[in-house]
Image (cartoon, rainbow, N blue to C red; front, side, top):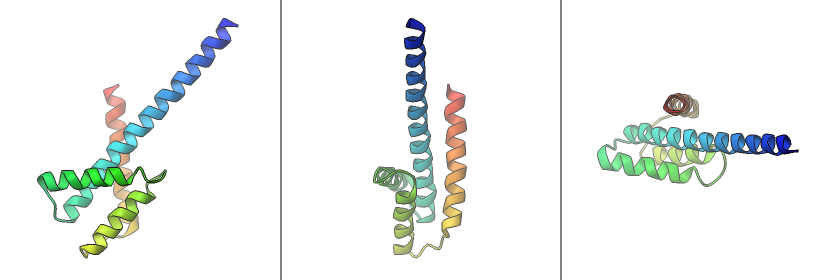
Length: 107
């Protein structure tokens, strides 16, 4: 019975670690996406960092990145920045893949 308990703990630990890694990848990708959006909005330095943090905060509204895209789209619209959703998705995917590779290489 001990082997079964050990195996269950191992699965639980793996699940916890996978969830933690997924959260860290998502957060890093969203922050980098926020910096990309800040650049398109003409922000730099501390203003860009503040904006990227706001984009990360927006990601906690609901699962997925739709909340992030809605925030950035609204900000782009307010500043008359032209950007298609497909471009945002492409850029986010690039940021996500880079964040994942970076975090995996850290481990």
